[in-house]
Image (cartoon, rainbow, N blue to C red; front, side, top):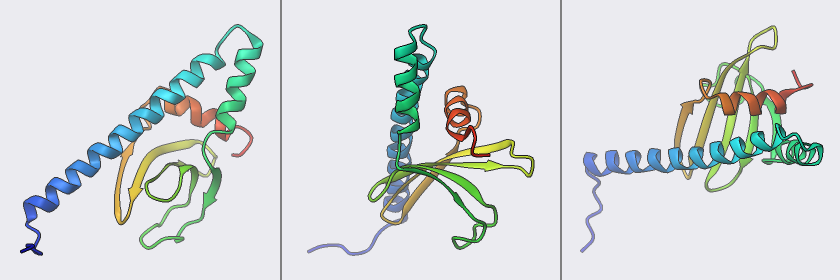
Length: 137
């Protein structure tokens, strides 16, 4: 017979496991972006240009999410959406009134579960976001 009750330990374990999956996805994204950034800095103009194009085409879209679009969301942000569906992931880029980037959050979501982490301190992510946002803000 199936036990339909869920113990708090099981829920906590599932959340911890989901956070590890989100961290793993972020590490993969970070490694990929670092490799593209390395090629952007190539002394070979063809390699550098191809890497710029690859970065600009990476992900699904870059769009603005106005404040109050979602329940509890008070600040607007730029969304660099990398994947959609189950699972989905994105970078949320918060800027101030002078268009300076103030925070970057990596968000991983899958079927009613959500984990996020600040990645503002990561030079590779900041550099990639600076390039992607060039001319937007």
